[in-house]
Image 1 (cartoon, rainbow, N blue to C red):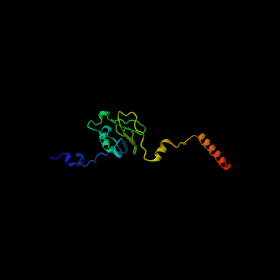
Image 2: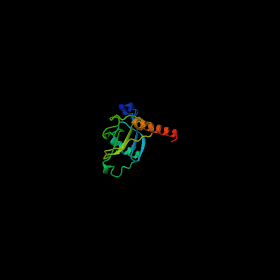
Image 3: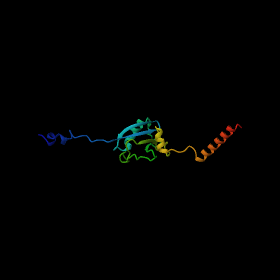
Image 4: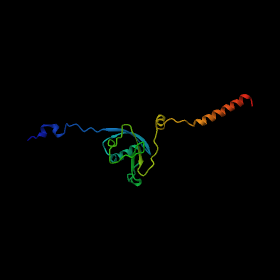
Length: 152
């Protein structure tokens, strides 16, 4: 006796293509180190946190970090990512830098910069002192030059 499943391998799922899992590449900066990872975009963060902890070099401890309130991921602007939602649901983009922080830490560490260009881009170029200080310094230097030239 043969069934429809015996005659049609596609109906049994044997030759059906596996569902495509999309990955997003993120930088992960934690207290113990930094890693560049490709993680599934559609998996809730709560399921990814143990793996993220391992790759950042952080030890979750026997209580999984519950002794200090657990772990959270923050964006560069300090905003927390929700553990129940996936990276895709929270609009995390390719190449974004995420910070692994203790949940009880209300003041996350400042951003980590690998390149001076990133710092200039984030903070802009500022004059090292005001224009009035430049004028006063130039005036003092001119007075010293006049005194030195007069032989005093």
